[in-house]
View (cartoon, one colour):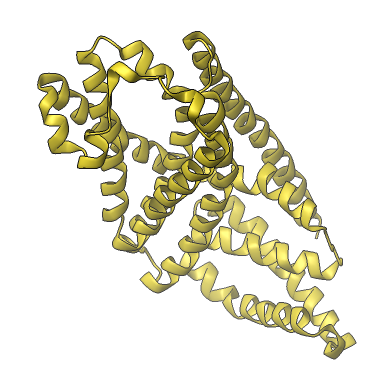
Length: 329
């Protein structure tokens, strides 16, 4: 049986289960005993369908759909009322990691686009520093003073600076994510353009033989900040790809489904931006040695790797437990 036949054969049961979920969420007082019996039967059928779909169509959209449907039904059936804190914890320990690993290739493409822009900006400005004014907005280009790198930090309001940086970074990430609705074109532009900005600045500091100092002021917050932007950009690229190549579904369906996943990925980057904003507001301009700043960058990267690795272990453990439950139904 191919995936289209599988969907056609079971679609009515899934729609009926959706209706029961909506009815029970809206007003449980009007749910009869017969409704509960029918709901439980549909839940068991859908759980079996999910197990089958995970085995034979693991990469198909229907598997993700069934996973969400069965999860909602399970929570209602067994009254799994969990606190907001537990929901938040589960999201960041499993859900976000699962979404991230499912679209790692899009995150890599986002990183490639940014790197491509960065190399281009670096090469252009390294060949002629005056070209900086052609690549960067005037207010940025005129404000760059390599000879004053690190000067005047005693007069910086770190709390205000951290807030402003956080706001700006989230705006960039949101633009990269929302650009997916333009079939990913705006997302690609945002990634390449921001790469050009960083590359052009690196090229300028190379002229002043200050490459080591420049990156010491970039990487402490830049590692975690750029990874968050790559994740948001990857979410936008995935949405754009699904709109461009919708497969067996309509573009409206893909927009609805991928936007939901992409929003969750975007929300998952917010703690990363908060951490990056704190580092950029307090540590980057702080009176620390350049070696300490590089050490902070290394620790943030190591922390992110550990988070993903441990998260993947938890995801696989939960999926294994869920699969064994479904197979017993």
